[in-house]
Every structure is written in structure tokens, then in C-alpha cells.
Length: 294
Image (cartoon, rainbow, N blue to C red; front, side, top):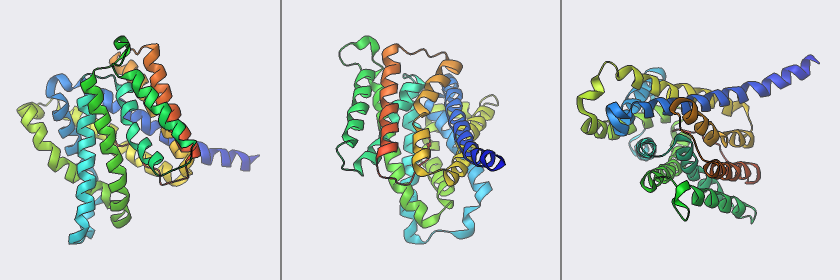
């Protein structure tokens, strides 16, 4: 009996960590969106990346083992895709509800998973995802559609997420855990000037800086740590299956923190994208899982 309880606890613990991590990420995104009237999405992205990079550099001290000269390119490409993903996602949140933005962005890692497979059943997940996207975009019955520009930003963020996975696997294989710290620094160097150009001195407002730090902790430092612990204790397929819950958690966070109410059709579209991600995680050949970096 005790052995059964122990085994259950060993499985339940990493699952609970992963759920907490997803809730943390989406709560952070909700708080970030609430700050857009003060500093805009570019300014909020700059604050998040600046504080996240500072925290990770202090915690991991990656300079103790510097990459070789030729080893910087994978890190630079990884950091650039990370910065672009964050900026484009926040740009999407200006006009698109959180849950919908997360669902559209999720098409990036879904595409990476499906492109690595050739079995006929995997094309079912493509059709499901495309069906969900079609329901969200202003095609046909525009009453259920979302802002097309915002939707394009979310899809572009998904493309950056796909690049983040590809470059992150290469950089991670070469540099291990230091990759996240170096990549976050590259992302901050690229995006912070854009945020400063858009928000200016508003970024130094005493009311804004603590929120920027809170978003960095909620959306980056804290959940990434939990996800990494969960990833080492869960099979890749289980990890990917649980991650497919992310759009639903985003929609619920948007409802609770931002009052974003979705239509039945929009919930159905999110459900279709979740089903596509779930199906891909269950049927596509196991691959290295990648944590959500929104």
C-alpha cells in the first residue's frame, strides 16, 4: 500500500509542478497585458526580458564557461527567436484575447512535431489545427472572428516558437543549461532598445518596474524552473500531453484576470487546437519535449 502511494506521489508531483508552471505563465501574461496602457507591449516585453536575463545570469553565472567563438551562432539565433516570440506574442495580446493568442501561437511547436512525422494519422492533427484557426480568423461569419492583425502577430509568434525549438535544441546540446541565460541576454539586447524607443522614460516609473519584475518571475524564471524539474521526471509524451492544456489555461486566465469572455465558437476553436496538440503528443514518435516560453 505504501509503495503504491509512493509511486502515485512520484507521478503526481511533477504533474502538479507542470500545472503550476502553466498557470504561472498565463497569469504573468495577464498581468503584462494589464500594463499595456502604461508602457505598451514593446515596453512590457523589454521589462520582462531585461529582468529575466538579469535573474538567470545571477543564478546560473554562465560566464564561468564561455562558449567557443564558433559556438555563439546557435545561441544568437536561439536568443533572437526567443525575443521575437515574446515581442510578437505581446503585440498579439493588444487586440486578441489571451486564450486565443496562446492557441494560435501553439501552432508553432505543433508544426515542428508534425513536420518530423510522415504517418497518415498525423495529418488529422493538421486538419484539426487548421479548422481551429479557420474558426478564429475573420473568415465567413466575422462575428466570431478575431482581429486579423493580432491573429497574424500570434501566428508569427508561433513561427518564432518553432525556430526557438530548433535553435534551442542545437544550442542546448552544445552548451547545456547555460543556453537559457545566454539566450535571454541576447533577447534582451535585441528587444530592450525597441521597448525603450516605444515607452521611453515610462519604463522607469516606480509603479511599473515592480510589475515588470513580477512578470519576469511569473512568466520566465519561476515556471521555467518548474518545467525543467517536471521534464526530468515525466516521460516526454506525458509532458507533451499535459502541455496541450496551455491554451485552455490561457483562456481561463484571460477570463479571471482580464474579464475576456469568449464565444462558444471561439472555445470550440481552442478545443480543436488543443485536440490537435494532444493527438500529436500521443501519436507522433517521441521527441525531445520543449517547455512553453511565452
